[in-house]
Image (cartoon, rainbow, N blue to C red; front, side, top):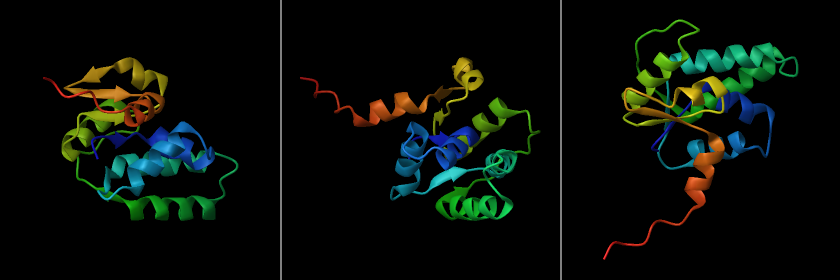
Amino acid sequence: MDVVLAPDIYVNASVSLGSPPEHVVRRALGGPARAKASAWVLERVESMLHALPEFKDDAVAEQMTAIRGLVEVVETDEFFIEDWVQALVALAKAAGVSRVLTDHPDLLATGARQDVEFVASDSWLVEQAAPPPPPRL
């Protein structure tokens, strides 16, 4: 796995079946390698799901159990709720990857920080579907 997922990808996938984030999550969590997440990401996902009226408490608990069962939690420093960029950069570095998948406009506008790039789920899906470049001669 060459990316980590921002909390918004998990939440969007949880509420919009058939959406690009849902396809990303299926690829990321369905592969042979376990996707990496941090406690900060899981806390944000849980908080965001609780804020959605269509997710009752037992549904949130069930969804979080499913997510936790599919990811490997890596240790990072502790971050405040609003420290999205710093927390996601730290997660990417701890996971040994250079990209964070997100559809959040503010994060996408960040571009790259500390050699970690913020990439939209649509762009990543197109990239995954494209054939590899021809070999150099």
